[in-house]
Image (cartoon, rainbow, N blue to C red; front, side, top):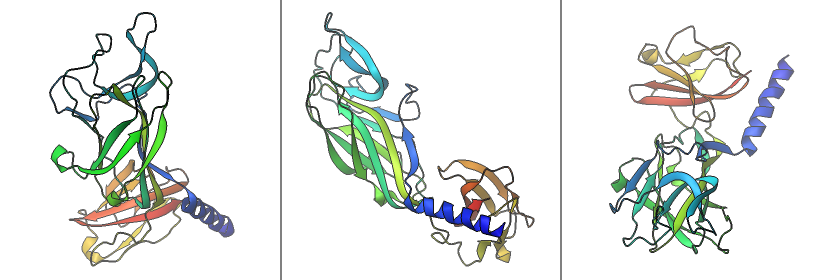
Length: 284
């Protein structure tokens, strides 16, 4: 049995060392961007919106929906045959918050996007911040979205290194337009990926001893911790590798039951009045 458990642990750790981990993604398949902050900064009534990618009906010249669910912004009148708007666009789309504190190594943003049909190459501005305040965002990179045909879907992946935000509990990405006039920018999918999971010693609980008595863990997660933290103010939280909170409890000497968790890799977050540590463990 011991050899089997050791093999399970080795297999999981080996897999972790070569995997890519999804921190957060959005494919807009629900046609809902209500968790985004969409700012019509120029005030002209045209803004980022979740919808189908635009197509032009060859018979009527009307704008119709295509087959891709996108987050799009346009400098044309979508209700009046696509006539160019007289005002320039300054729209900002701010993502929901995501947490990179469980991950290490390179953090990348992959943007699957295109200039809309009948457009040309367009530059999109990619910003980052640890706050949703629009004034706090700094430019990470300008990415050129390429178009070589007139009417074909040309969604492509564009990758941007955002490792400067590794280890942050709150990160936001924003997208803005740069060139005017344009027809449209359309984003089909956004993914935030990490090279590795956080190591067991990457975050240290200040001035204390803090470790698991057993790892892998089978039924009960028992924490060895300094005396000053053996109280109800010490909060334990268990997350999966996607950062989803699964369990939370105040510290208890008898430990925290994990018998209902599936086999796999998890994180234990230990917090007490600003002192914290994250511990990676295997549920067997």
